[in-house]
Length: 221
Image (cartoon, rainbow, N blue to C red):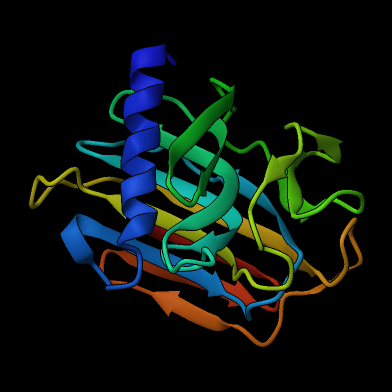
């Protein structure tokens, strides 16, 4: 992905999560699991089941912690990792994070993840250090420690598919993502347990094709 495109897509993804709460707001829609605050990590295997076809905006599938109002001062704080695609682009593996008063930081890890290839992704609080988190891909650290102030035991775990129409009403983005073996961490460094006690979210524009404990498939409606 060209740097200019990466920056633009990163900004768009950030805007999406900042307004994620109202279903369908500004052309965004989501389908997935929203857990209970206090998890110290979230993990899942994400697979693009078909090559996304994006007319406008972007589509994505990610796991993460935090949200638009979860910083100590009520502003945005989050960390997420997953796949995204924009118009004419392949599946990109990325992570991004936001800290209070600091713009989104977007990092591309791979520019062309094959359709059908599963990727195990996670964000996890570090066992050593204060309020430090790390991104993991296929069992290996994919980032340096990332500071999320006052985050321990306070952030919400999320695993979701995302669709944004780019502000073009009627734009049709086609996609299908599977999420498998979704887990949350109950201790820093990774004591994993099944994702339970959360809520299932499904907005207009995305359908849950199937769901089971810790797994689901979300696709364009």
